[in-house]
Image 1 (cartoon, rainbow, N blue to C red):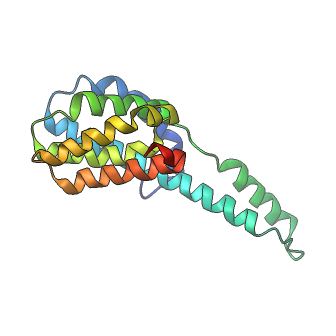
Image 2: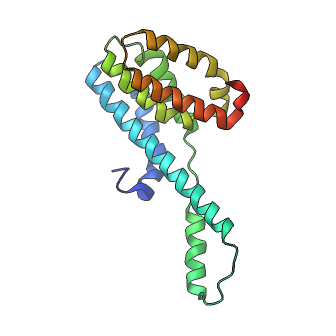
Image 3: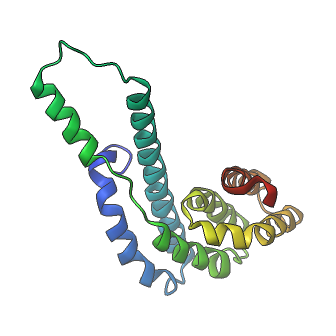
Length: 177
């Protein structure tokens, strides 16, 4: 649903995540954890896609400062309405809570396939975390990921998460790496 109706669904993601958060620590079955992780991954992916669309629109509008003299007033009001309705969504607090549940409770599972799915989900969660959480946990996360390479976990999923950590951290403060 989030992939096919991106602009319509993004406004509901914050509410959905707020509803999901209290249930996360109560989930005990692996198949339920897997389905919640998949849903959270899709929600985070939708928010990232939405925010990148907003950035592209603002960049293209800044690049084209030329005034089109042939444009009618009706088109101008529609463009203004689109800019007003296009706003960034902030789900960093919800994502921070979900991140804590994943890192402290779910990632310690013995099932390597499930752990690798959690790592991929964390790679989508990480760019949406609050900046202070990223700055505080970078060293610990990289150390944990390097230790996971020694375990029998799919190295591709650990690499995907490590890539997300490196890209996000380098955007904030490259000196931390």
